[in-house]
Structures are given as C-alpha cells and as structure tokens.
Image 1 (tube, helix red, strand yellow):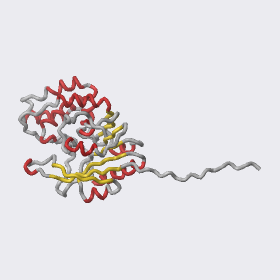
Image 2 (image 1 turned 120 degrees about the vertical axis):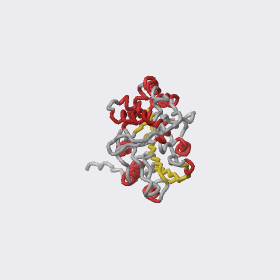
Image 3 (image 1 turned 30 degrees about the vertical axis):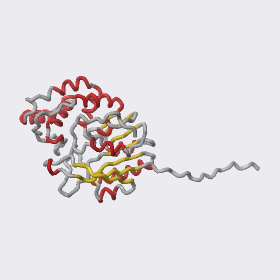
Image 4 (image 1 turned 180 degrees about the vertical axis):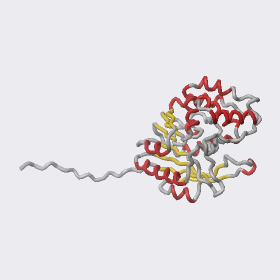
Length: 291
C-alpha cells in the first residue's frame, strides 16, 4: 500500500482514533482502486492512504453531514467555524448553552458547526448521545482549544476523492465488489464486564453485531474482497475472527480518566485475504453427429 506523502492528523478529536496505528494498518492494506470504510470515524486511515477513490460511511449522521459540508463548502465552513473558537466560547456556561443549541437544531449547517465546536471543547473528544439522541458530553475545561484550520483544508482537498454515506455497516459490506479493500474499525469489544461502550450513535453495537461483521467479512472474502478489521485482542474476538489471519500488537490506551494510569492493551488485526478459487474441471459437451 502506497502511503500518503505526509502523515496527516484528523481535524476531529476521536476516541479510538487510528492516527498512531496508521503505519501498522497500512501494512495489511493491498493496492486497489477503492478503499471502503464502513466505520470511518475521524478518518485517519482515509487521510493517510492513497487510493484513487474512497467510500466512507458512518452510522453517525452528524459526522457524515459535517464531512459533506467540509467537502463542498470548505472556505465558508472553516471561516464560520472559527468564530466559535474564542475565550468567551471556552467557558462552561457557554458550552452548555451551545450544546443545548446543537440538540435543539434541525439545521444541518448549524449542527455541523456546533459539532466541531463540541468535539474540540468537550471532554476528551468524546462523541456520545443519550437514549433520546441528545449529545451529552460534559465540558472539557481546556485552556485553549485548538482550531484545526490546516487539517480542515487538507480533509476538504482529499475528500474530493471520497463518497460519503450514512448507512448500516451491513449495507457497505454487502456492496463491496471483487478487488475492493475494506477497512473496518467498529466499536471495540469491552475488555471487561464493567468497561461498557458508551454509545457514539443512538444505535448501539453489541456482540451480535460483532459476530455479524465477522460473517460478512468472510462472505466478502469469498467474493474476492480484502477485509481488515481492528478490535481488542481477546479470546472472544479471536474466536469470531478464526477464519482470518490474526496479527496482534501492544498499543497505548486512547481514553482514560487518569492520564497517569493509561497503559497498554493488545490490539488485534483480522485480515481476510481473498482466497484463490481453484479452477474446476469443466467437461465439454460435444455436439452429437447426426445420424
């Protein structure tokens, strides 16, 4: 896989973002015309690979709406978004007011502006909604939140090669055709019973979804599609990915309330490479001679 010339950061802060794992992921992504990402998240793999075209999907409608606006109206969007990054806006009361404004808004442009603001001013870059679909991440109390202007412009330029969608992972997996490459970064399996995943979309992603994704990867593999899935390295993930080539490495935690206690966890890459279909013996049926 040919890398991009420069390693680029996403303009969003993202729990579980893959910036630090891009090099490891790239080693498993073969050359192809198209890279498909059913769980694009902050887009670090997209930003640091060099495919001719991309199909980037996420179930989070706010995220995809934001990406489409950055792609189609970069100058206007970046100029307007920058107005939210002021000392006045970086206060708890202002944050809570703008968070409520986001939750009450039906305007796609306004929501996209506020989504970026909330991402950079909220706690740890989390993206979390309650059961009513309301964004509920608390204020982050950062000294001076960074406005990612350069990263936004880079994303906008690269996005000209991308098609964005907000659909189910099942739909994207089933659409992948022979020769395509699929990278999946689903919500991870909890490492313990108490480490439950806080929903980043109103729909959850449970163990049945994890197993279904593995089954869809096997089906795609049979169609000549390369699929790479990231997850925690656990006994259970090794079981559901048993048809894949498994590669494990130690990585640092990206989310922890206490920075001093952030440790290493095992990351697992399940690689489904297309299997060569043996040529079946075909019996030629010769036309019978008349008479």
